[in-house]
Image (tube, rainbow, N blue to C red; front, top):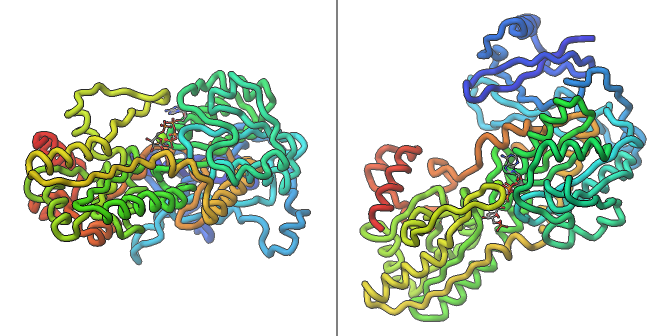
Length: 519
Ligand SMILES: Nc1ncnc2c1ncn2[C@@H]1O[C@H](COP(=O)(O)OP(=O)(O)OP(=O)(O)O)[C@@H](O)[C@H]1O
Ligand SMILES: O=P(O)(O)OC[C@H]1O[C@](O)(CO)[C@@H](O)[C@@H]1O
Ligand SMILES: [Mg+2]
């Protein structure tokens, strides 16, 4: 048996920790690997100093494999060897050496950087299909495409791997220990992708790792497919850890779901495009309304708790939006460069104005003016105050009382409507790839992973990597600048902030404080 070495990065220390696994099937290091490098890596095994990597800076952030803690697990030829679907495919199986680069824009001399294992079917599987008992659960808020993912997990397991024992866990994590299961077959799930929502129902809260894993063990489940957002993926990591602690042959696969697109590392979350498309309809309605009256002010509130991606992309797509407000970019109302001034100017120029506001924007102001206390949902997420209503009121008050100018306010809140629809064509295809990749990964014995596209290639990503940070709009990146250039709205930064050339956390905090004072 040959020693193979895989890596994960202890990100907080920006260093690489080698993990040695005694696996004969996985010689995972970039090829060709010089002897010198290989011996350097071996040397690290006995050297606990965690801050080294291969000479050229290649890092693989690998996902766990069942054989890490069950070294004697037997493997089997992948049933896809005999699959009609793959019969004439040139390369059915993904090479164990295929990796996906986290960054594709690099400099000539820069280190090779972080890579993830490429998703897809493997030559060998670590489950005998007849012995697989899989389950699927959906947690957190809704998102277009959940049903497609459920459907394709069931069909993928059944059609590609001959698995016919698949259970639906109803009502999110708590369903593991409080509800009966549902038998899922391709026939049962055949039409569900045409509906919004989740066929299995969902919930917030109720994650009890021990009870869940007890239940997994009692029911003889050995593959767990968990569809959900950042909170759900944190829960999936705990389930994986407990499974490993108990030494169970259970593969835990996470499929990232979030309407907010706030999951890190992956290119984009499924259902996001559908949501942006749907948001267009609300923006269009606002535009039609305000164009048809004098001094029309349209406000459209879109989802986005901490990340304003839906608002940003809907704005960029629409061209009817004058100003987009997101949680990442503090704004202010009064004075030079403020929102009131901008609204007044657009009303004078065009006779109407459309504002898109992400629900998480300006929460500090709303809280201050409403004197509310923080409330949380069952999962511990802060409950948001209605910034859309608050903003409508502020603008109305300003123009009628201060400016003595009559305006026609139209406030549209389509938040739930945009996430309750079925997924569009491209999201449906994306959901299919996610589901099939998750199935291939679990069958191949990988566990504790989240699947998702990184630079358009599907990869297996350690769950901790997608939960340690949230994907937010970086004001210092070009995309936000593109939006500002497209709407020509104020950036709400003063010139000294702009002069500094970048907006970091400290500056944002200063801006926040200043804005709060001005209310
Ligand atoms: N830190 C955590 N550890 C364990 N379980 C968690 C954690 N955070 C959330 N969960 C569980 O994950 C499930 C979903 O979490 P949450 O309501 O935050 O939604 P989410 O998965 O983040 O999706 P979204 O934010 O897109 O709606 C809940 O059942 C919750 O109990
Ligand atoms: O009202 P619910 O269902 O808890 O969900 C609302 C939240 O869920 C999200 O859609 C994330 O899933 C947020 O954008 C929103 O704040
Ligand atoms: Mg979340």
